[in-house]
Image 1 (cartoon, rainbow, N blue to C red):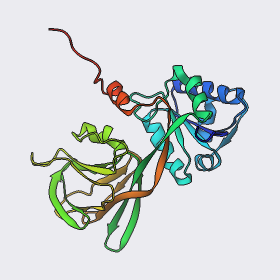
Image 2 (image 1 turned 180 degrees about the vertical axis):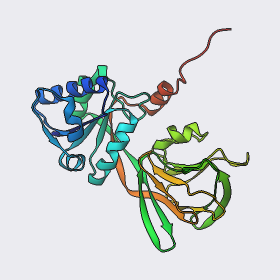
Image 3 (image 1 turned 90 degrees about the horizontal axis):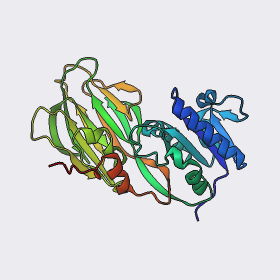
Image 4 (image 1 turned 45 degrees about the vertical axis):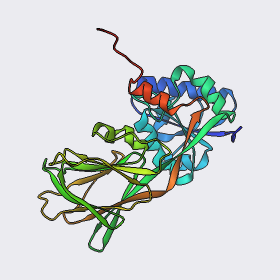
Length: 295
């Protein structure tokens, strides 16, 4: 049996009735079983005529033993950025479309959450990426990413000219719409739609996926998670591109700048029910189990 949780944080995606209904069900269950519950301030409006304590997200992640996130993968990723700072584990209840990270279905809510809170669960570490932009002597932290760091066109839809160096070894120069640098967690997200491979979550690797490259020979490449990746924005580029971490805020990258990407020192503690199976998740979400028997 693993650690038993006693103080629970509750976060939910905003503006969706089914999310609100599920949040209420989770709160009622937790309070009926005498757990101490803290609700994120921005989530608090979902609860009417109920007594609870609310807290800002950063303080919430610091105070609780476990964060329960109701929504889709995007909601969990957003919460993860706060959770990793305080080494707080995260459990997801799926109210999104895919749900690679949010395991629990609403119909199994009480059973699965009850098992987890009683110490019957799996804990998995998912590493993150750290991105920084350097222009001459000026270095700017661009953010952290559980899924991916994406180099993309700026305000003008033009190809970006850039070169890639890995561990001080030149790899290639490219003209493309951009580049996706993804973790194994992110390999089933944006990188997958760009033609990248699926990486097993515990693999210590990073995948680089070019976006609409100018040459057909450009292909995804998988490197060690210990690698230091540097993307140099060529001075021949005619428009400054953007950089985004996990689809959060975009940062303008000056022409001539270097973007350095490497594994973050901290990891997300992702909680799963005991019966969680990664390959079953892939089969279900990607419809691998469906066969066309029509002749």
